[in-house]
Image (tube, rainbow over all chains, first blue to last red; front, side, top):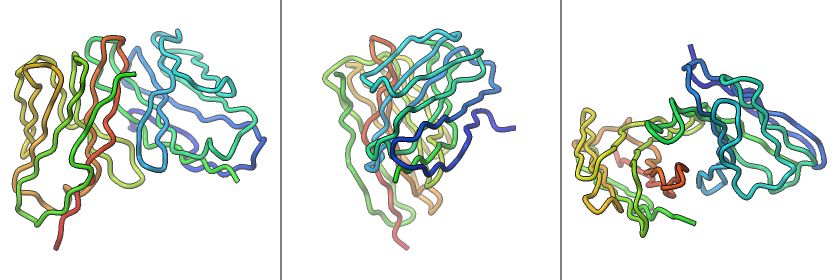
Length: 114
Length: 110
């Protein structure tokens, strides 16, 4: 069983569209994250949720809206997609927020905005 | 914001050679993590370090949490072709964010 799974793996869409990426973890972790990896492979945190509550919200355009319906899921909705949103988006989870924060990553969603 | 300086940016080595890479920061980190990423995959945790001075091994990999809490290194001994990939250091900052270095790209020459 995949520990952290994201769907879809690839997403190609036109500018201006709205799209969602889903993430699920079956590790029983309390904390989930979204990271963005740019073309230079730089990984930057976007959001962190702990027990369904938003803990970290980096300087991310408000077109990006995360939603955590329960501890095991953290979805990312993006409105009015722009060319610069093209990147690989990784979901991750960790046992707790703070202590023991080794994060386990999904396989990524490669978003291409055309 | 807090940043991690990871070096070298890339390495080209012969199979069988040892590899060393490191991360430094101007800020203190409470946890150091080392990840490996292969093409088309997410980063995979290799080693986690929690205490200053801690030295931890995972097979041919050894990593240390610097005494000053501002640096960490990763060594790979006797490299093999499957070691190819991008290695990332990451640190947990005081505000509990996991911040990543820019990665070290390891290439192994035939």
